[in-house]
Length: 224
Image 1 (cartoon, helix red, strand yellow):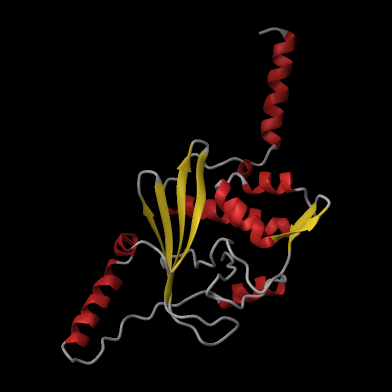
Image 2 (cartoon, helix red, strand yellow):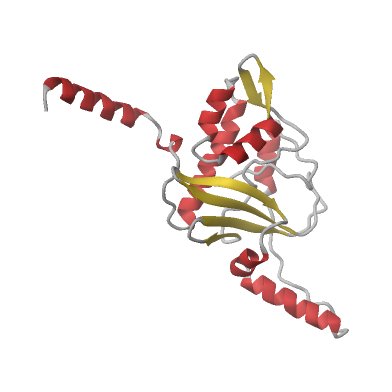
């Protein structure tokens, strides 16, 4: 290797060292902890768009490692405002296409298939506090593209039943038992209580300027 080639090699290595790892798409995801870390980085990329005005090209570059083109387009359309190359996100009555407000604990289920990953959590009905909603599942669908894993879809109470069956076998079993008892005229089965979002964390994000009002569209979620 000549002197010129060695210099280029050193400069390239130095450049790679300076670039944060999370600007690249995640080519492999092994297990739930890596999936959670990936979604945490995806959420951070979304939140960072409120820090300062950017061009649309810069915003696309920030979101690109974590979201498909279709998901990026929907997120930008719903949440990014501005003009003359000064675009950013602001607080709003609802914030669609943000990473869901998961507990990121044993309540958060990960179902892995060959080229798809579903991340699902059950949220029991809530009528108090800043948000009210009925029992529902919230899910994210990740797909593997040629440059790595990307968030492809947000599913509000539209998680495929086969995914729910895999993620929550006990809950599905109890639900079927309850339905059978109700058909026979027995007392309704009282299922297990599953605690929902951590509202102290939700309060923190509300203080940053995002208000959640329309649950039928989304809630903005934080990480624990």
